Image (cartoon, rainbow, N blue to C red; front, side, top):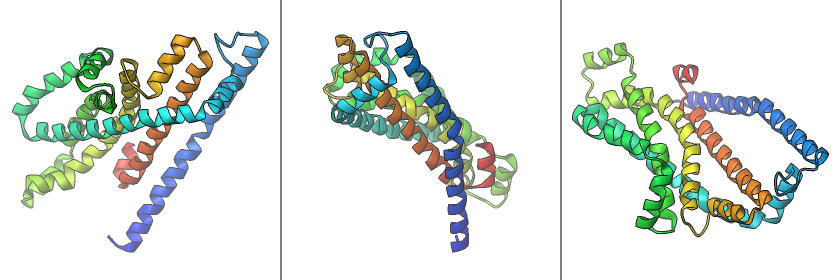
Length: 270
């Protein structure tokens, strides 16, 4: 690839990132409007703090407990990110296996559906018993949470290849590996990123749910403790912290998607 092509690709990617940031303006405006309405309503109707704290009270609590919240949030996000990476990698690998082995798909896909059908709250206690109260069960639950949507999308994407492209590669004598590298891989990327944007949030939810069933650190433990203490301000603080981290993780995936899907057809589909 020439320097001009690299520069042009970089400019296109940067333009997409800037465009995405501009697109966020309406959402931010609505968020601020809701916050103002919430603050006014709580003050006008004198709603008790233990029932519904105002945004300003939540902000004060976040500032007061910032170190504790950050430490627990980091612990949760480490588990979520590791689970997201492991779950996505395993799902894509299994999708490739399904692509080239119909027998493997017929044998394993029903098990994947079964795993998806089991509630996370039912699996989490078992994994805590088996793996302990450390990082491992949270990573496992996060991986399970994001596994199925990625698997389904990756299988669909790997098989969604233009027939003319496959015929052309067959005519020139391309091997299966070359067909995968030059056609199927690029066809699957938009589907994989679509699943990754969903999985980025479900991985965080999975990690937090695992913390509900037993953990020493994490936002989930903060939520459980605040619930027992009926500390609504701390509950909202933990929710806000986890939500912000989840949103950042989502948009990190979006940025990577914008950079990776650089060809025109991919941007049109996205």
